[in-house]
Length: 151
Image 1: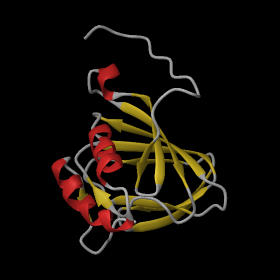
Image 2 (image 1 turned 90 degrees about the vertical axis):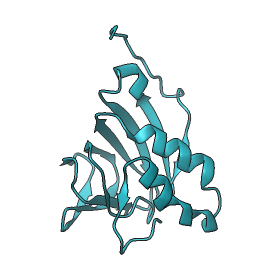
Image 3 (image 1 turned 30 degrees about the horizontal axis):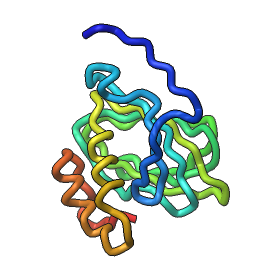
Image 4 (image 1 turned 120 degrees about the horizontal axis):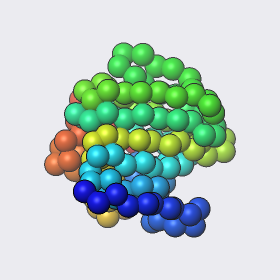
């Protein structure tokens, strides 16, 4: 793979709507040979993905705001400056707690999230469309917890 310098300016990148959040890729999978990707996620109060798992690793750095985070069987309150790592296969999810949108940087390795996020943004437009999310997830290797309904 040829190494390419990547610069993403604040105004660059498409904003995807995913499970009540806004996702913007800072570094796309195609730019790293699928090795990893990095995204900025803005999380309004009570929005976010329900508990789910997948085979790739994810790491989270909370830039602004507060979230309730599920990691394995533990629920925790996290805030700006906190970091979490979820190895592949770990049940995880989060929801916004702040009145102002929280902001989270999410690193996935190897990169897999982009195709799922783009399909959800394209296919899930109205509340009744949310029933499509588990099947979309399954196509992309994401398994939502049986007891959870995508928000």
